[in-house]
Amino acid sequence: MQVSLLDLKAQYNTIKDEVKESIEQVLESQHFIMGPQVKSLEEKIAAYTQCKHAVAVASGSDALVISLMAMDIKPGDAVITTPYTFFATAGAVARLGAIPIFVDINPKTYNIDPEKIEDVFRKKSVNRSPLTVNQSSIKALIPVHLYGQSADMDPIMDIAKRYNLTVIEDGAQAIGTEYKGRRVGSIGDFGCFSFFPSKNLGGFGDGGMVTTNSDEYADKMRVLRLHGSKPKYYHKVVGMNSRLDTLNAAVLEVKLAHLDKWSTARKNNAEWYNAKFKDVGLADQFVTTPYSEGWRHIYNQYVIRCKNRDGLMKHLKENGIGCEVYYPVPLHIQECFKDLGYKQGDCPISEAAALETVAIPVYPELTPEQKGYVVETIRKFYM
Ligand SMILES: *Cc1c(COP(=O)(O)O)cnc(C)c1O
Image 1 (cartoon, rainbow, N blue to C red):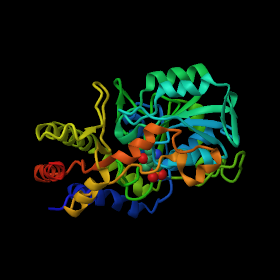
Image 2: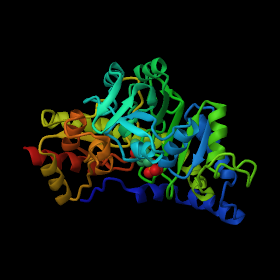
Image 3: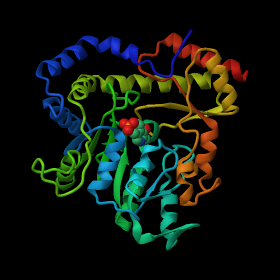
């Protein structure tokens, strides 16, 4: 049996006709840039994320960059974030000449630990040779809702308020995720989403969206994504070319209507795994990402933390099961950030997680036979 980590073809087969019809409309209109489907998708995503505005952009990475630009992040400013995330979270900060400050994660949720954010402000400055960052340079905070589970937003928002930080939620893996009944992206000042094909709401190519409740930020971002021009050919600011293609918006509108069903199927698969791993006596070989009651987890990834991770991965691959490490190198020790002065040991929880975690298939279309085969294959490895 083969079980890939994600099977986009299985999903496409269920929506082929709808998608083709929607694409056909764009083809007939030949309105490829900022067509009406972009605006209607923005309205639908705003409603879905419980935000006043949604601004479509070219990728989740650009969503982060444009948010930082809209709040006027400048070279030398500093932004707190997690090292245990996809590169784009900190890449966006660095691309604007700002300095990422990495704060380690909570070992249970893999999301940024609010207690440790507080530690940053207990010192007057962040001191790591060759870099010194004064507290007053810290302007923003980017929590990531990793794997589809919300970061602990109440203490994060409390810290942001006390230290006057703008909060940009990186919800690239978390569209529809809830924190105490509220949709992520609506809690901070900005919410950034990605339509990369492997996200829960995946497009046919790159795409992204920024949500905000601020009229001012929304207006700024609508100008920034069009080279900063308003009116056309008049530039008050230097923006970028970052738009969501109409074709992709047309596909995403179709898929959005199915999203809740798919996210529920992922959750059911995850809960089935949780129970099954316990049943077969694997509970002390590894732990699974916990689910906090009342917080809706959308399981973009189902990640286990296990003994002999690399051996297990080899065994899974030999038996036709897809798996992947998200992420093998925490950002504070990435080569491109070596000038920031971090070293191995600075974020020990992230470093340990990077060595012990692996994502296994949880996509909505998994069959009971496939799930059973995944559990049985893992069981055989340990017993
Ligand atoms: C995917 C992802 C991004 C970037 O999104 P792209 O659309 O691929 O640019 C940013 N942050 C996180 C946490 C992601 O998972």
